[in-house]
Image 1: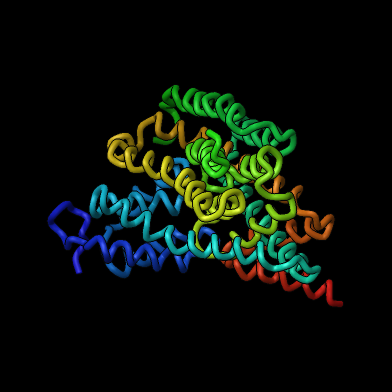
Image 2: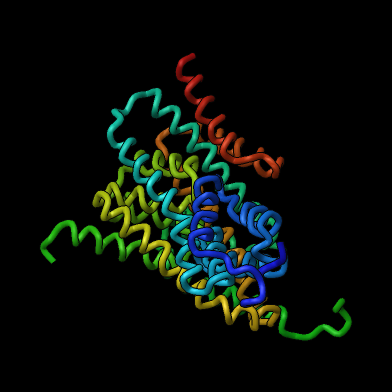
Length: 195
Length: 180
């Protein structure tokens, strides 16, 4: 099977197959592993996307707001079948987990609280909070290498996490500042540095 | 509008649609604000309920932001779940779709790197704030704080560890401790 990245030259992926592929992905991705599954399924196994197309889509999906797995589905669907492809991928990825989430919320509301259930959910929550911290710290390790980014990270955490200020004004203040600092830092060309 | 269902749906949309465009670095970034809005501002869930639904959403398949559908269901049933999920996923997906084409030309430019480098520490700070928000909502006291720290440390130390078994192990540990 050849790579179908070039418009029109490769195999045309049907919308139904696109939906089905993302539906399976949505039902089998746990704990934020969508990107690695997209790679395995769409690049390595089916050959619908080439490596470069995948990396570009993955980078954009992380930069844009929203869940990166969901954004990746939009990008992959768009690159294969434009607008309809993006819709098919999005619906495929989200419809199964949506139904399950609502069913679980309804079940949770029906089951009377018992100490045992409370303990079970507390333990799962502890693991899930640990996962959140690990994710945040992993991004922090990669992102906060300079004093200005460490300062921005702490300011964000302090304002939203500790002081519990509303997120919108905090972001409106910190995001432009942080981007401007990053831009300014890289602006002067350094002829002596590595290329 | 007099209709209480319509009012609840509007409130859900007004909470989740802006969050959709603010969730830089993924759903973890808006966790703190979701907790604040759902528990503190609108009372859609109690504090314990929010922590429980958070836990359930993390072991369920799909993106962790499906927590929005659970909160929407609590607030206004099926229509609420649909409104919350659409409000959370449509704006960011549309933005990503529109950015898709420009992206290929823009890639590698100085501004692109500045946006990436500038938003990354904010995303990290927001995600850590989200962990703290759920930790405060969870009623378990020090055992939850200790277990979260242990789970976070093990996931950092062993990056190949799958998160779902870690969460289930946490659930098993707390259940066994209670039965002991």
